[in-house]
Image 1: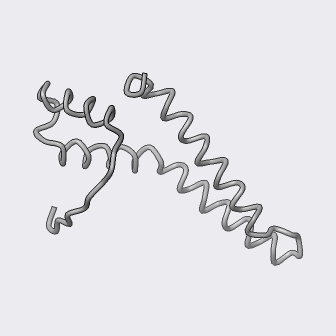
Image 2: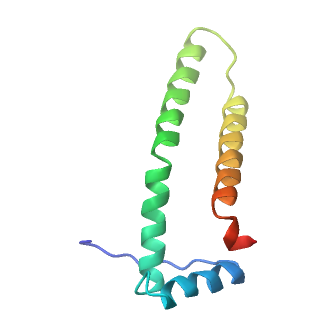
Length: 99
């Protein structure tokens, strides 16, 4: 990492407590490392979603040029559904954190 930027985040207490266990067990040296690795994992996990969104945006643009009604509301609805699905999959995969 050539450049570092400091940020502040707000997390649920239970998530912080579970995170401390991972650090205490030696899986991560500190909270920053845990967050960095989590973000990297999330980016990797969502690569296919990003590609799907690119395809959807292209499709909406092409359909608009053809004269079909593809308002932003329809696109936002799809994005909301993708986010909801992503959240459900994450909760299923990591239910031990909130369970």
